[in-house]
Image 1: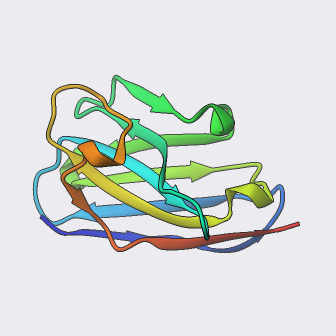
Image 2: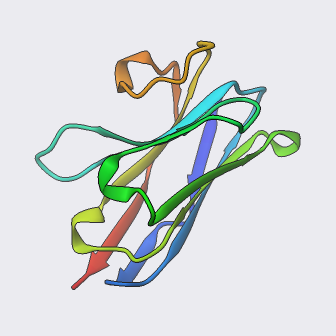
Image 3: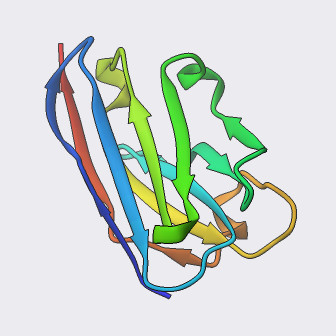
Length: 120
């Protein structure tokens, strides 16, 4: 399975971006992660196959929203009220577990990443 992430860019603080990720095959649980320079990759949000279950990093709750379209094998991340600390490369990933998980080590396939830069 291949993943293609898109939608990153440069935005001012307080602005919005919508990331998209399309999978070449059927996906199960899907997640978004990010990695800032010099830092470890961290969990941002995940969504179950049905879309009924979602998890978020505490610092993005109320600002970010994850959604999916199973007909397109796609997952989205709507990011509002962006802050400079959200600057990172954002990755989408697939986890074939039946449990919604947050550790990068649990995810099976990864996209190439898309850069999000928030200027203050």
